[in-house]
Amino acid sequence: MKKSILVLGMFVLVGMMMSCGGGGNTGGTTVVPDTPKKADKIEFYVIQQSKTPAPEWASSDEAWSEGAEGGKKFVYLRVEAEDPQKETAKLLAQGQKIAQMADAIKQLATHEFAKVTEGMAGEGAGLETYVYDAVAAVSKNVDTSGALEAGTYWEYIQEIKGAQDKTYYRYIIRFKIDYDKFMAAMKNAWGQQVKALNPELKEKGQNMLNAINNAQ
Picture (tube, rainbow, N blue to C red):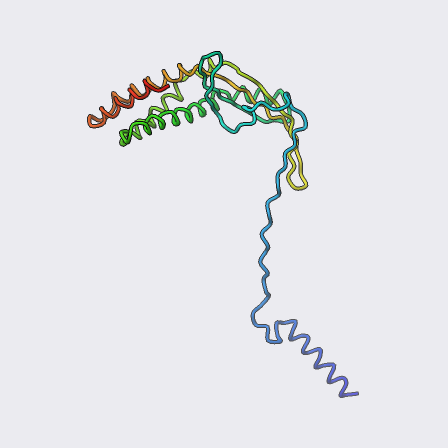
């Protein structure tokens, strides 16, 4: 009987030692690193739309493009906004018109100036700062308020992310600006920069202005 009690006591003692970190486990609690979770996939479903299929310009991610109508060249710009209410989405898009179009014109001007400098066989070196200032002038001076509306499109979207979903309207408006007016603003902006160029860059600046004047 005493021997049984003694053995039982030894088991209890060993159990207490193990629960207190005994039994040779001197490294503490093992931490298992969390497995990185994959981001929930976002799915979009068009429940309703104003036109089927959607116009190509509405589906594009480009803020601007060039094109022609009736033999006349235009710069096309697009603005968009989202809201649970269709009319609010439309008003938001119209309200963001000037800011979004100014940014699109800045992108277009940067692109057009880059095309000119590429065609100058390296003569554009040293003109980078002046080009930056000219781009800013173009985006500021083009009259976006006079742009003509060239199309509207809206769609009602269901967006699903994991177990959550939401619905909203996406409203897109397309505007067009006379390409010649844009080019006139670009020429004027660069003409002002030529006056401010360092003497050693004046010839390059004039060559660039000639290239802009000859651009199609």
